Image 1 (cartoon, helix red, strand yellow):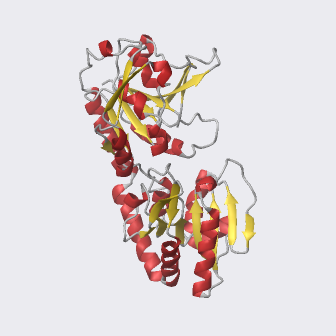
Image 2: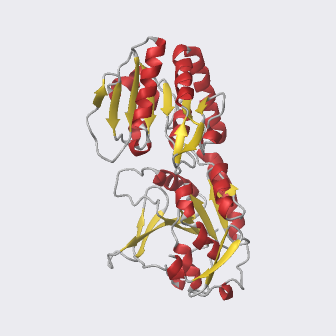
Image 3: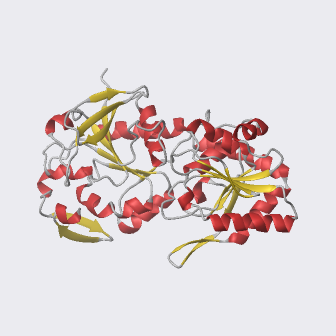
Length: 402
């Protein structure tokens, strides 16, 4: 029996040039790999190399990589390409959907966006090409859906991303610390993620306040993440170690070296927060902000969420909440252990990849059963499309919108 075929397109694809995907590309890669058990999936990459354009490469992950000639805006997809697929899965704010103004062949689309920032640049143009009865929007959290609906009142399917619970799992703390040369006898508050989104001053000042109030010198802050360049561990201070970029296989070792996952990072891009889920899957209690996706993933019995508010055009975290949460967990080893166990169970129940993949599989099958809209093409003219935002309609050309 023929499998349905899906073209996977967008700005968060992994092209294989690095050893492993990073950032948002992790979700795209992991989901596509798992969906390839049920569908024929091709990741579509643009290339300016005319010899490479048109080639297809097999991968060990189950999906193929297909190369097409780099297109200029607005995007055009020819009929021959479209006939090879039953639907297109579009990741992030990639405006490939503008091809619909130039072809009579219409495929169903699933749009998946990672953050509110990319969403703001996408909503206006997407609203002109979106077909409610033929397309699907999937987002990782309720907060992203609420952000979208403030500007564009359209149905959204909320499907939380997954984590590999067999890869991110509890391991022996001492063995993990030895492998990364992290002091064995310290209480470690650990952070994993982009350093650019971490308020280092806030994190370190919180650490110092905790140590002072508890009269303890055995508490340290260890951060990992950053650009794809290995660096020697840096002792910024006696109680602050920066490990730099870690290979993927090292991530569970780092997380299991921590006593508390300390994540005082917020921003408009935090629509879900995958590293928090990875930490929960490793059995860590969480200290983070009550912001966007974190407010949904971290329950009261798995960690602490500091209050947030807007201040001077940015997100402000209540530092006293961070300090008191860290103090309580440092003082109470039993609480750390109990919250960590509950965090692991929560990751297994709500954020395993099997749960996420099954929701996408059923959604895609339902999407591909729908009848192609015959009248949609007649509503689209490249020189005059209708953008819908906040209940208003704006007539504009595609090129002006882009």
